[in-house]
Length: 364
Image (cartoon, rainbow, N blue to C red):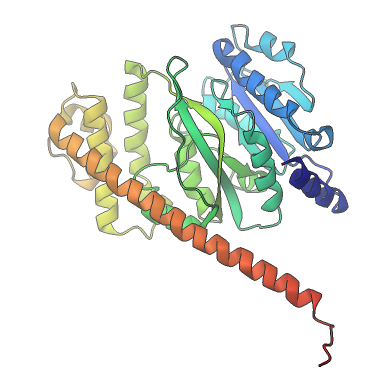
């Protein structure tokens, strides 16, 4: 592992890249309960890397004027790489504003946003760096994703996801047409090309729970996703409070009302199916609210004339059916992406051989 990373670093040095390769950014507000675990996982991962490679990383903690010990815990850490602790000019009640402030200060070519309650897998950071270096000059790649595990801090982590064992280069348009209308295929620990993030003006502050989903739509319009089959982190599964459920229903319905704007090429059948899925989720998450009540709260849902009453059984059936279809599409796109990546690599090596033997004359 160290040998291949040393070779990657040597290439970076030859190209005189001064800015860090990767910025690991943690926005936080009152996350003292998790900060030590999350930053501890970063420190453990950094300690496995050679010093010269650690120099290609920066870590940024952006504290949104916490009222607990978050800031003190961040200050208590020493890391072997560049490490900054910053705060926005004032407390942002909208957490998406803090996310944008944090990520816009990053200096690396790539961004990895690590939530305060998430963790890096100790050996996963080396794989992230290899992917960052390998795709640095492939401008078509705007997002990168490895494998992750869900965990709740009590039980053993769930199995890694996705299980696909090969690298893949997936077209952004394919993801936007087949997966994004229904759900986000790769949520936690996504690596973003910094220049693309800034050109897109970051996350949409109209949302505080589905802001990542909305932005992936926009980023995938201009580029592709590279998948590397290595476990890189763990995603903490928070308990859903009644307030959280109400907010996430509101944002899902609100975002669904903009699906056609985000992707004007969506067919009517796909759009209707996607909106119906969001209504089924609303019924499952808020079973006590009648259809009349929540369509009054979220009037944009009425634009799609999908106001029929769904009971819990019907909603469950819709969610399960879409879940199976979604999983099939995830692995279908990964399989096709692996073939695409293999073709890309083959063309690359053929091109290298052609350059190498361009002026060679063979005598027989």
